[in-house]
Every structure is written in structure tokens, then in C-alpha cells.
Length: 361
Ligand code: SF4
Image (tube, rainbow, N blue to C red):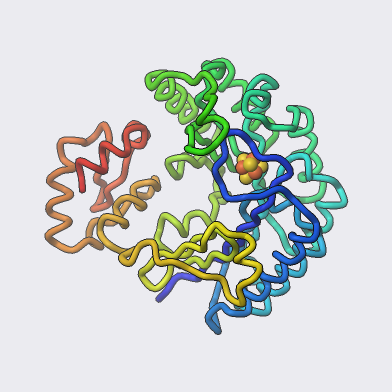
């Protein structure tokens, strides 16, 4: 039986561009956002008839820059276009500065039940270097306001890898997030992306050894605080893993709408061009096939080993299974484990995941 699909809406607007970010987004402007909203609804109506979905995810960009009315327009269009489960996970990525009492009410009315907050750190110096406009206090108020409004399913982004983020600094960030009772944390190592301001003027970063130490420190602190390290970059308390994001790693189908959105279904991967004007002008968004064999053994192993649950080796063709298990043996138990036919990476394996995957594949 096919797993229910996820619907992803890429919202390509930001108030200000952060110097490290290469996600596709443009400066917010009211008129373009409304034209974009109409285009999203048009594309939702073009989805295959009878599609069953159990997650909806607004990513970006800064989706919380959409007005309550625009979000409502899109979520209604989703419900008209697909069979969205009544208890579907509906996530909105939100900048802490946009989390007002009025916005929270509008988000609830539109059916949003999970917020992913771009907090990154609660250290003023880290926020300054990352070019974030919110203060630690504003991040904390955003969390409190969201919880007061009834949003228990919260996620926070945490960035690490700057030279100023020593063990003490990272521990303080993790303490703050766990004390705020945020049940899901996505932790990303700062990467310098091409064509970003950081590519021209990179900030001081920790060396490879220090990055590895921070990663394992984070694993230790968060697992001790009751979080499961369920994916290479994600931690959750019981019941709070991201249902939508797990579709990416389990190769379950998802349909992306908006410029730069990605999709995976019918054994292929697709990408919409990074072109907002084209997306608004086209009756139906263009999509390029980026991977014609999305369910190949390589893809299944690469994505499945990102998850703590790993991959069931009996799902692999015999010849591939034998080869992969032979190559996995010397990497056990430090980097890989094999339990009842399930192959999984350890946190030490995740740290050097590219090398482990190269050895296996
Ligand atoms: S990090 Fe978020 S807010 Fe900053 S530019 Fe990227 S998408 Fe926009």
C-alpha cells in the first residue's frame, strides 16, 4: 500500500536575506505575495485527483510573512484539492519576529498545528554573526506566546559551527531550548554556500575536530534531556518527530509547490525552477526531473541511514545486500550496527557519513 503523501509549499519571501542562506527567496512585497498565493492555489488544483495526504508543510523563505488570509486561502485550497487527514501534521516555518498573538490566532484558524521557529541560538554574539535580526529575548517571547496560544508541537532550528560556539556556548543554547520545553530541535552545522555573503567573507568557524566534539556533545546533552536523536540532524521528544520530514528519508511520496520546491513520487524526483516570476506567470508550474531513479539502492541506503531506524536489509536485492553487508562489517560497531537485519548508523557514523556511504556504496 502506498504511504500517504506530504504536500510542501515553498514560500520564497524573506524580510532580509541572511548571509549564510542559499534557499531560494526574494524580498517581501505585498503585491507579488498575493499573485504568488493565487499561483499556489492554481497548482494545488492541478495535483492528481484523489491524492491522500497526511502532512502539509510551509517552508521557505519565511512562510510566516504570508498574511492569515493568504494562509487560509492556501490551506482551504489544499483541503479542496487533496484528501488531507483530519489529524494531518500542518507545519509553518516562522521567524520569531513574526510570532504575534494576532498571527498565532490566524495560523490556528488556518489549521496550522506545528511551528518550526528559526531561533538558531540564544547567544547575542552568535545571532549577530549570523545576521539574524531577533534577540534572544524575542526568541524566548515567541516560544512563550506560541505555547500560550496552544501550540505544543514546536521545533527550533539550532545552528552550530562558529568559532565562538565553544562547548560552554553550545551547552547554554541547548539548555535554553530544552528549558523552554521545545520538543523538537533541528541542529545544523554552518556550511558556507556559494554565492552567499559568507562565501565572500566567511566568519571564523571551528575546525573539524571541534565540530565533531560539538556534534557529539549535542547528542549527549539532548539524549540525556529525553530527546531521541532520530535523524542525523534532528532530535525529538517521544511523539514529536517530524512526520513530514520523515517522508523525505523514507522515500514516501511528497508533492512540492512553488519556485525551488522539490517533489518525489512515482519513482522520480522533480524540481521547480528557482524563478518566482515564471511560477506566477505559468498556468501550471514547470518541473524538471532531477532523479529518474529515486528508489535505487543507492538512494535508499543514503537516505535510510540518515534515520536512527536505519534500513531493513531484506528489502534490498540479494546481490546488493550481500555486497553492502560485506563492506559494512569492518565499520561495525563504531560507525554501523546490524540488529535483526536492520542496518543503522551510530552518531559517530553520522559524523563521517559521507565516508561511510562511500565505503558501502
Ligand atoms: S535563513 Fe530563513 S530568513 Fe534567513 S534568508 Fe534563509 S530562508 Fe530567509
